[in-house]
Image (cartoon, rainbow, N blue to C red; front, side, top):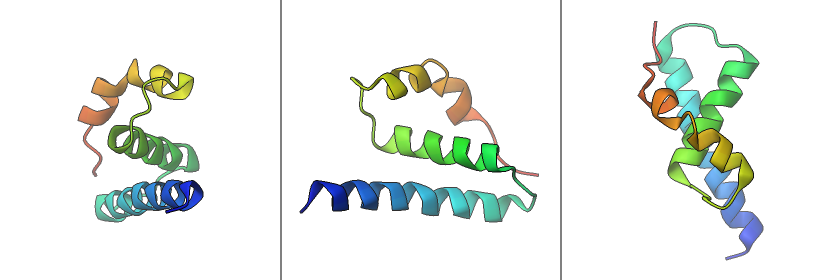
Length: 71
């Protein structure tokens, strides 16, 4: 499978899960909150430990992943 297609599938999966959480929360979300949730899901599911972006995210991942998203 092409690397670009694999990456697109990973991104789509994270976006779908983020959309489901947002819809289930029953409240409005800002674009910043939405992108943050998508980023959290993507990095949790597809870690890239040698990436600077991942390393920065990993510094706060425990707090971010344990956050309850709801009303």
